[in-house]
Image (cartoon, rainbow, N blue to C red; front, side, top):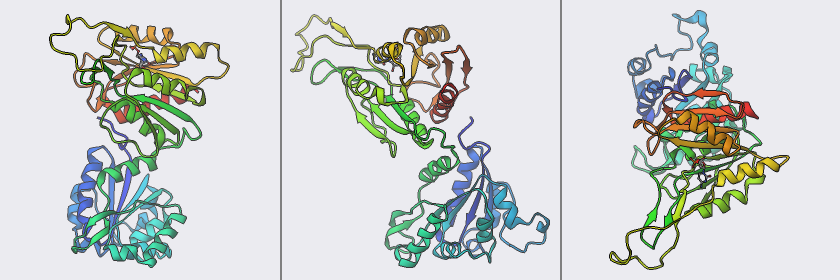
Length: 402
Ligand code: C5P
């Protein structure tokens, strides 16, 4: 399945720290997602992990010698940094960082970085006293001034037994940084509001009406929009997904609270994406005491919740300037027709239609298969994709409409 890293060309530069062995796994992870990985190693790195291992895992010969005769005609210290989308230095030792900070080009790794035109991500890893030394701090600051991205190490126990900052960052963090670095900032200056998750409609202090929605699609949209430079507000129903970094999260419980949170902010937004599975009904009466087993005749009177998106669509009709409205439609049959009907009925600009009869996509899983229909009638049927990638495709469609 295609991922945001598919066909991306990553040049991995390994310098000589004990954490070098972790980059073997990173190489596998990158390739598993369809990225192409080329590896260059400092002489010291070869003492920690062999070029043979990295060649086997990357599927390409490893570069380490600036004077290598066998591919001298390609001038590797220039070509390597030009034939990639991103340079990833990991682990970056105090020594490599110092040499980069002073523009030294006496080894392949630092020469390639000096000549590279691609973005450079640097993952320092070293003993925490070395990391905190004023020399290393100053060198890292210089690297940031040069425009490189420094991904700080994590705190914890070092190979030498010391505790503190200096452990090589975890893969999931680096993966996110790589994707951010490779993502165009095409939503810069845009304010995007996303709703996510289910709502809870309480019947008594213990019971509630809700849906199986996990919130994953909405959180993926908020993360993707943030990564593309937007200012993002996420109005989220209950769930257990971590807040996306840099996103303003407004937690709500019920449809009534979501209604208030969205409507009070709507006019300030450029785009509103309603990915939440809002409960259409709530119990007509809330009982402040737990309802006894034998207290009712088992019928549950319901009251309709406001349809937030429909209300936004109504407001848009009379407005000179109103945010672009994007809805979701989870349908179990006639999904295209139903989606198109909702797009018109709710006066939307774009709708993402889920066929929920498939069990490999949709609710509470990481993948989704959606069809996008826009206000001009254009239909785009997307294949099964990760929710992360679906989010980016939806944002692409939004940008085409703007
Ligand atoms: O009509 P239906 O509920 O299928 O429409 C789904 C779309 O409408 C979703 O985008 C959902 O977030 C939104 N919706 C809403 N308020 C409701 C019900 C649904 O905003 N009460």
